[in-house]
Length: 428
Ligand code: EPZ
Image 1 (cartoon, rainbow, N blue to C red):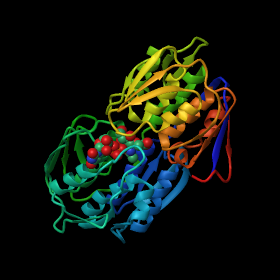
Image 2: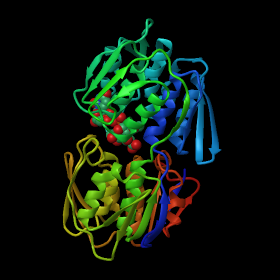
Image 3: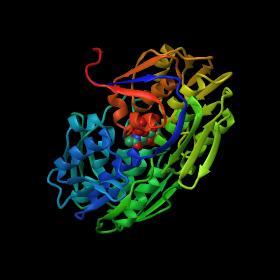
Image 4: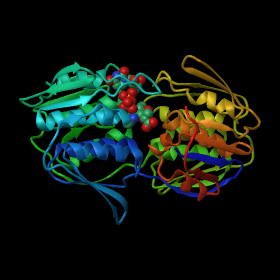
């Protein structure tokens, strides 16, 4: 398995183009199951996760064609008919979001058998809200031997669904099922992430009738069928936020292009508080930091528009070098501090109590061998490595490859000393 080696200390200067959002792209790919016409997704990221989902979709009957369009990578998905409504454990365990094919399969064929995703390194991550919403829409659900068996032979029907707490996945999954349900569906306490608005925009382009996406109340009027069409994937706000933090940790000046600064406002405000200069540009944002030391800043993760849990590990890496003490509270996932012991290997001073980490800034980090535990945790180790003295080697880079496109190239184009080491890593 590959590793990434970084020699820290280089100042980042230049520009980094932001790719399409992974967490939007995979839901948009699932949306293609809802129509027998081709859906062309532009601004597509090329990632391990999009490849996993393409493999599953092909088994269900989708022709998936990746091509280079005039504006960059695109994927055409075409499902003339569903040839199988079965998603096996082997496919779903590789990527949890594969579970989101359940709703479209029921909506289009009236039945499906999809593996439950199981837990993951950042938390238990149940799917009870997804299943309750599908039941509210009229699906009959049985759980047996790790599989969801769903039936709705007479189709789904609209319902009023109030989520007890905000869930991105359950909101998206409900939308994917409700667009073809008879009558009106109302989602209350819906997630407001930009990826949800992106999914709704794509579905509306296909002929769905969704209002209010991006707010806590979404109304869907079901339609009989959806068409295909073209849709550009929203820029990846987590990738943009990650490189903003990377620029802040090394100092220098980096322009992030093809991104939407308003989607990372909570992070940008915290960077400004810490002493980073943030300047909006016509197609993104510029991040500049001078030689002075950063200030410690407290952070609480929250659903959008709050501070993204997917940027918590990266921001913690930044705070390990700031002057003073920073308190970072994680409220979305119960076990999202797996990066803490790895950051400690680089010399960070962090203590964790429950959902709260206290980060006491140190003068310097020192390079070491560290292990990636999940996607965002891995990139926090890269960020720390960019600032550490000497060489840092990040093991288990496959986590990174799930969600960061051409990471080494994008960083080395700005002057980072980072390279991929191909081959074996130590046994676990
Ligand atoms: C999405 O996960 C993202 N994944 C996550 O990014 C992101 O961290 C998360 O939203 C929050 O922003 C994708 O989009 C593929 P949730 P999701 O449902 O939809 C609990 C990354 O690194 N919950 O909003 O799974 C859940 O356990 C990933 O790209 C239930 O209890 O997140 C969590 O504590 C990691 N029951 C909280 O809700 C349910 O049925 C929020 O989860 C559903 C969720």
